[in-house]
Length: 152
Image (tube, rainbow, N blue to C red; front, side, top):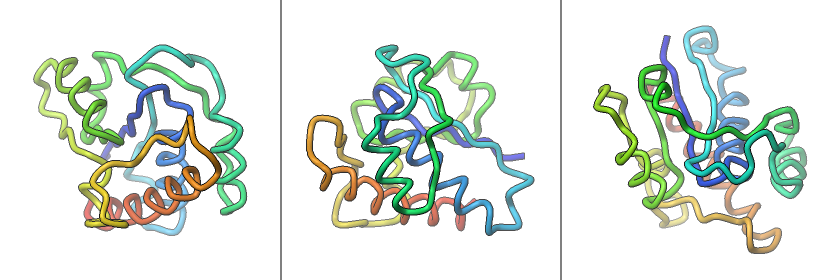
């Protein structure tokens, strides 16, 4: 069993969308029974909240329902439970490195997969922007999660 955790700051935009895309790609894969997936945030701002309504709407327009997900914060136990912990940006990757108790979990940036997607190395946070930011986020995550699954 391989376990993958997607991480952003508040767990209401990028990481639940990554989880949604990864689950979507898993459905059409023979790897589905061998992969466990979740998402979390480095901060506690939105614990228990559903994803941002704009993320839900944008994902739904692409055939993926993330409305049932709820935000949670990364815990020390996650480093024991997950093989891969993928941050959406360098700031969250550094926060994860600070929390890492040295378990051997693979910490990386989400866009280390889907090489050179739109020429970016980080998934920009769409929270304070408009709809175009959510569309870009989804484009990036669709390709990166598909590439991740292919490499697992």
